[in-house]
Image 1 (spheres, rainbow, N blue to C red):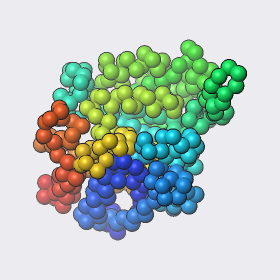
Image 2 (image 1 turned 120 degrees about the horizontal axis):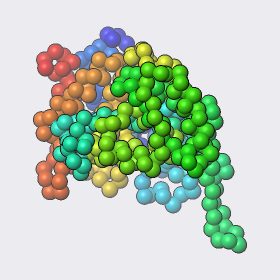
Image 3 (image 1 turned 45 degrees about the vertical axis):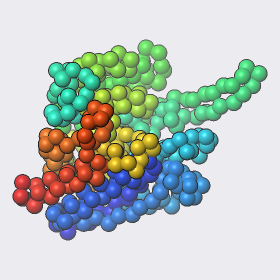
Image 4 (image 1 turned 180 degrees about the horizontal axis):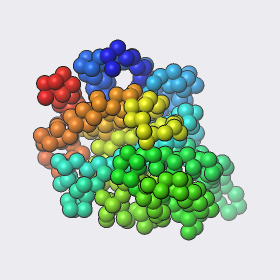
Length: 377
C-alpha cells in the first residue's frame, strides 16, 4: 500500500452533492495520512452546475478526464431550477451520458441494516434485523437509453413513447456478475423480471436461466417485479443478490432504502468490468461511486445532509477500484462504530429531535478511522 498513487475525479454536482463529496475528500486525506497511499484529485462540473457554467450538463473533455482517472466520486445531480429544460439538456442527461460513455453497466447498491439503526426504520425490528442484500442494476440499457424516445402532439392529442430494448449479451454479463458476487456473500441470486407480460423480460428470464446452469453451487430463483416489491419488505433477510434491468433496479433500490432507515445511508458503485469478481478481492476495476440519495436542494447548505451514503461509496471505491480492501473494511467499521455511539443526522431522527450536522458526522467518522488506521483503536 505504501507509495501507491491513485488519481480520483471528483464530480460534486448539485444540491447537497458538494457537501457530501467534501466529507469524502477529507476521509481520503485521512487514508493518505495514515496508510501511505497517495491521492491526486481532479474536479469537474456535472449536471446543473455544468449547465450554469457551460450551457451543457457534461462536457466531452470531462468524459476524457474521467477515463484518465482510477475512479470517479460523484455527489448528486438535478434540481427544480433546471426542470423546465428539454430532457436531453437536463442535469440527469449528463449522468446518463457518463454512464453510457464509460460503459458502467453494473450498478451495485448494497443495503445493510446496521444494528444501531434498527429502530430508525418504519418497519418492525424483527423483520429487518439481519437484512443484508445487494441490488445489482443493469445501468446502460433498457428504457433510459432505448430509441425511439420522444413526445409529440397530433390529432389525438399529446403522445409519448419510450423503448425498452435488451440484448442477450447485456443480460448475460450482468447476470453472470450477480453469480460472482453471490459467491462472495450468501450464495443466492434472485433474478427479477416481468416475464408474464414483457418480451424483454422473457428474454431476460431465458438468459438468466442459462447462466444459472453454469453456477450449480449458487441458489437461484426468478421473481416477478411486482411480487418481489412486496417480498423485499415483508421478508428482506431472505434475499442476497437481486439482479434486474435498469428501471426495475432504479425503483426497487429506492424502496429497500426503507430497511436502512434513510436513503442517505445507501452507497453505490457503477462498474464497467466483466471480469471475475468471485476470486480476486483486491483487484482494481474502474468505477464511478455515488450515494443513492438525490441532490435534495431543499436542504442544501443547511448542514442536514447525511454523508454516510457517500462515505460508504468511498469505501466501495477503495475496495473495488483501488485494491485497498483492508482500508475499506476499517472505514465501514468506523461508520458502524459512530452509529453505535448514537450519532444521527437529521434524516435519522424524529422531527424536533437533536441531530449532528453533515460535517460533524463526517469528522466523527474521520476521527474513528484515524484511530483504527494508526493502531490506536
